[in-house]
Length: 463
Image (cartoon, rainbow, N blue to C red):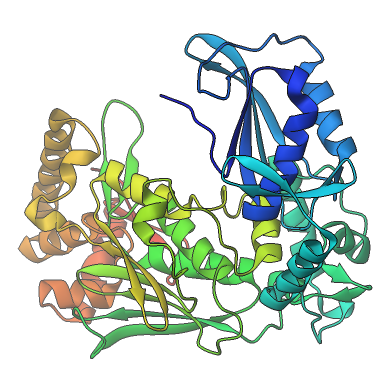
């Protein structure tokens, strides 16, 4: 891999150039909110290596935090590049303007330009104008869910992306930068107030359009609650199958769960909160669409981000920063790439659609009944064993309870989250018949229900 400098990457021959690196960090933060510095690589891309002592990371961290204002907490690690030790600094921040050694800079190409007082003022005005989430909310501290803040801090501390513990709601939100003059910002409201009125609409449709729906829900709550509910809804209504190899049985979803999680999280983090239209998840026969009422940056396309060439343009920087610290979203500008790569690894097609009112991530559902997508989760021999085990158990069901029971058993093993009315529709049987057969299969120790009727799933005991 050939390294070269850019508007978000700075190369330094060694930590002897640490002061210049701190200046570059401030310049990159003021332009793009995130970037990387490599120590041990010359500015022409030649890897020469960096001498690393026991205190090197500590010294670099101290220099960055002491000489940048506002402070940031970068990620610093050793990395082998072309068999040479290098030091890599990854950093991000949204509290522009950033000052290095008392002066502000802006990244222009591969150079760091000194900002004038007028330019600094313009940057502050621009930030205030664009950032809805930094405006004062009409909610008060009593509206904040203490439980949600404590759970958030537990995750953020576990991720080691913050360096303080929970004390009380006001102090914690203040340290997170979510208060302005002691008052809640809009970011604090949507993240931690349960009584927020925006909705996440979710529905299952019978076909490939929105003409006939089989189920419809409306979720309300803060971002963390909406995310959890929307993710659970998708997982409940997609297909799952069992994979049995030499180890424990694995339950495989038709769409990678990590890709669903990333898509739902990004749709909430980057939505346009001034738009009264809510987020949506629509489950069709052929696809799952996750809609975000926030238009895509005009100068970029989804393909730029998939190729790793897109840079972050944050509609809600305070919300993004907060969710990043708890690992509820990952590195900025990498979400679409992560979704694409998760789906590619699982053999699932995903499409990113820019629409007039927002943005859609569309997961194309594999046709498992035709064998599509089954070759991407294990060896050919393992797949054949799964099919053989499933067929053997189905024969036992037929022998004991008849052909109708076999039909229902196969329907359930093809989708462990399927509901009785869906089994009835799929098998062309009455719901009463389905329920009676399931009762016998459970009594015969072929099936077990895990969790509640709504949100639970089937466990097949003898496959």
